[in-house]
Image (cartoon, rainbow, N blue to C red; front, side, top):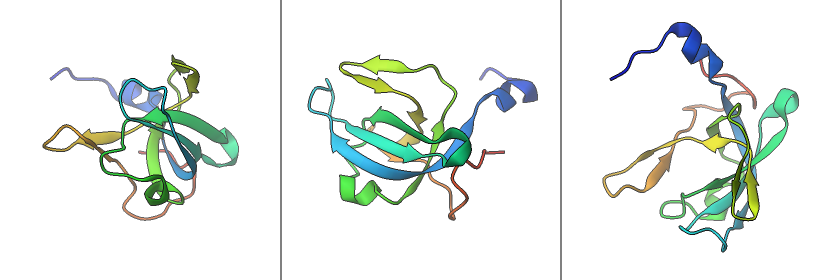
Length: 112
């Protein structure tokens, strides 16, 4: 495992945000949702494409907090522009389980 410095870690903007909208993404090569998240007044609302359909329906996600990396460059995924990375862990089948705060925190809170 490669080690990083504390300064390297501080560069990663891991922020809490609340899912405000989820839509189907039929153009995606692998099953995915389009997800919009409110990261608070400093960052605002960002969108991403997430391959999380195995465990989550849209109604399971809206109103829930997630953890996202908000300082990656935007990435075009087909016709969609992804603005952040929704974080998670693969389960035993390789399907993603979303990383979430244990308790509700203010949107935009930075992981420390």
